[in-house]
Image 1 (cartoon, protein in one colour):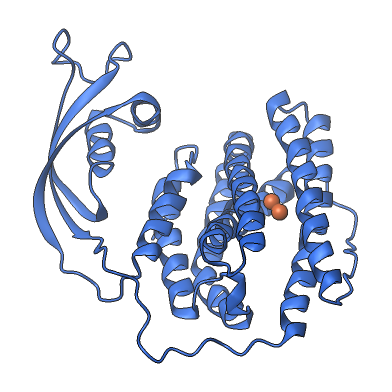
Image 2 (spheres, rainbow, N blue to C red):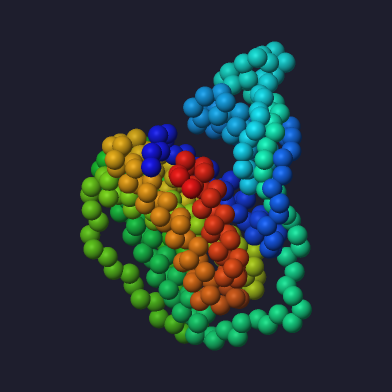
Length: 329
Ligand SMILES: [Fe+2]
Ligand SMILES: [Fe+2]
């Protein structure tokens, strides 16, 4: 596996697509078809495409994909035109928007109504299951405080750009809030929270990069998507409000992981980059099975998707994230 470019991922865009599909509650796979699309790209989207594609054909391809609501199989034809005063040089950095016309083979997302069947029986959740869910997640949030504090220290020693260090410090503060909120809920439900413990961290660049590539770029990023689902589906207003705050924080943490990944990537050898890409691909592949398990174990009132929904969310997340990061399918 060769990932030649520095992986740059916009996690919010990936999360939005995954949640939109899941919210639609779609079941049957729609048919693939070919259509023509027209539209413009501008702002951050245009800048991202201009800076992260190797040549003008790839830029047109990437811009075209932003116009399609569905899984793109192939961009069959693509034409980019600049603004009136510069139509023949669409990707000139001076241009603020680019018009795209393209023909695409794709499978549309079908937005059907997410209604449960008549006679659906809610899971009979024991109180101690809910309490133990809070206790386990409070424990994990507390472990995240240590993870971000150690990472901030490590980055400072490595003279990393100040904003990366500062974002890690802010993330550690976020994780304290998450831990305290979940610890309070666990205790209110009568559960004890076991404090985390860990071996001292390794100083080595590759080890840190590998850990971030899997724990941050995949696990924490997907946790952000699941938290957003909980924010919409948890049964109580108290929990929906809590998961809304956690989801917003975790999305920032997932994006931080990808920004760190790009900074670390540039310091690695080709063999080390290859190892990172393989580890991320494996982690993305494993997400479906682990999500099914977690969904089955989580009381429904906490807003996790049903196991089959969780699998589809994980698979779509893996596809979109893998494509953005340039990982092999
Ligand atoms: Fe957290
Ligand atoms: Fe986090």
